[in-house]
Image (cartoon, rainbow, N blue to C red):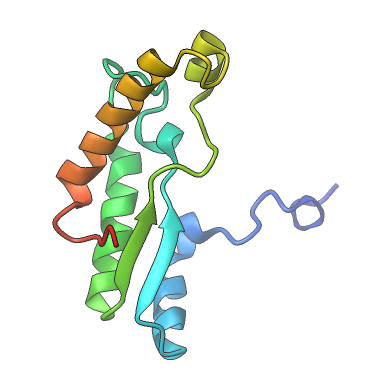
Length: 121
């Protein structure tokens, strides 16, 4: 089966975000809402787990690209992509106290890196 038959690359915004943002600008858009992948930023997801700097840099570059085109970035921090390690550890969101602590760390990482440039409104 060919890759174009299964949708594995679909939109491929990860590699084409600069072109995507330029296209939004050409349409007259002044805002862009996108989702941030928790597993891309902190693959294991936990509050003591390492940050994937390359993944975090992607979102920083995306925000900068939006701003350079006069487009306000509006990131969504969670869009149903719980890291697999946390899914397995807590069985989803069942251990609320623990997983909320993990999410707070994830959110703090994003606010520290993107909060001065991305809108929360």
